[in-house]
Amino acid sequence: KGLKVVVETLGFQHLDLEVTIPRVIIFRDAIVDLLQVELGTRFTPKAKDGWMTFLNYVGGSYIYVRVKFSERLKIISASWAQATKKAVDEVAAAEEAKEGEEAQAGEEGSGSRSGEEQVAGPAAGKGTDAAQAGKKKKGWFGGSKSSSNKGGEATSGDVAASEGDFRNTSVPTTYDEMFMFNSAVMGFGNHIWMNEVLASFDTIVTNVSNSYRLQEECDVLSLRMAKYKGSINLPEYKAVMLASLRSLCKD
Image (cartoon, rainbow, N blue to C red; front, top):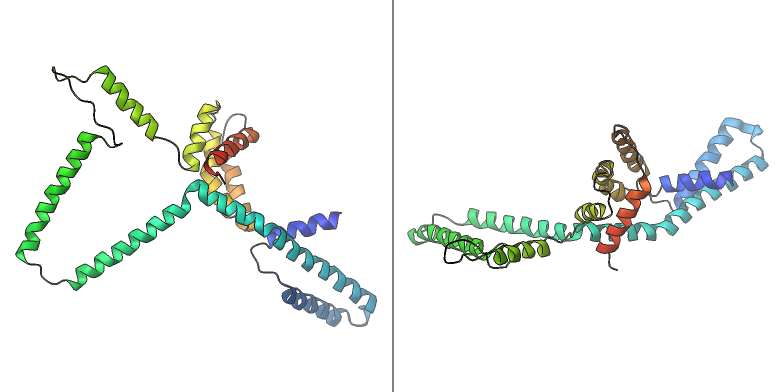
């Protein structure tokens, strides 16, 4: 049982490596040959069989752990990307980079512009200013800005309506925003130590398959939380985390 625990732990530490049967055979034969050279006649056939059986068990356990838990790691990565909107951000960044390259290529390919094109620049700027003014007049969240009465003062009903529109549009859409919202609703808003875990949580989840980087991130988080003066109850973070992920990961 103790050997099983140790081998499983080593298997998790090798998740970031592509462990295959041919590679296990190469490693096993190299170790056995080394023992054969160093021990000579003392390395009996029974000892050789024992070492080969042991190394086969260890290598097979590595492969088993990788195959069994790779699907779970994919689920974690996919759900976390959905919760943090990383996929959308990456697509938007790629589109912006592509547009920037096209614009740069267009500027390099174009020579001196005509007088009409130079005049069109200020006109376009005026159009943009007019659009901004119209947007401000209409309101950034799609609702009309509070109109003024005959005396030039906004009515209380208009102010309440504008505030209601603002509250309706500020819905949390990312994990950090949803976590802060749920922590306040669940009464954990004054638990400052949760912010430390939240700041490191993205890196921890992203590197869940890299045991060495995961250990480093956990050590750094432990050092940061050690400076906190007060009680720390990690199940409280777990409750808020699960509530946030349920709201963001529908599938």
